[in-house]
Image 1 (cartoon, rainbow, N blue to C red):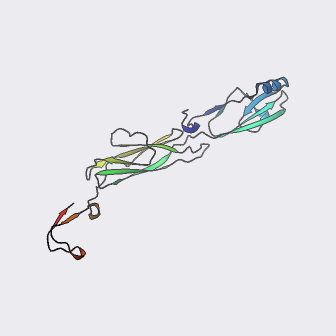
Image 2: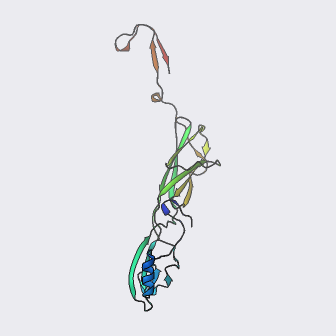
Image 3: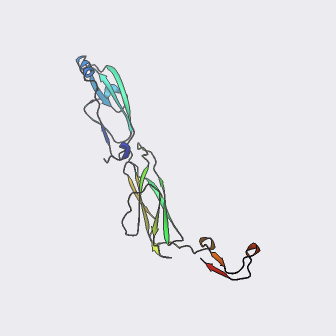
Length: 212
């Protein structure tokens, strides 16, 4: 399957084994031992020699043993197989309006393990509005769309991608309207210019020019 980030995959893994030290490999072979591999500890049931792959469709453990023709085990080793993630992430998306005619999309995403799959973790988010193009990959779960008209309706989309390259597309539903908030006093800075004498506690006997 697809090999993603940090060796995660959303497919299967074939595992082989070999004795790294060629001199020792020759020694074991001369002694009548063959390297056998399997996915359990019932060593005498193994039918795969080390160069014959064992297929893992879910996470587990690969075992390797030296075995002679009488099924006598001369040594064993194991390694965990834990980078398979076939579960698609889940999530929800919400949109809120800003005061600058823009709308911010927030994604709540979850990537969980289960049924033999690990949790590789969320890696990227993509965003789009209506039939527009997807954004570049983002590492944050928020994205702001600019130029939103007051009271206009749109569908906002997000795509969640985990490290194993499983993808989940979610959206806010059709015709989601956002209301751009009205300006309030704290959004404005007023500047007062005193043309006359400025007295105590900002009182004046002249005029005041105001800009904003």
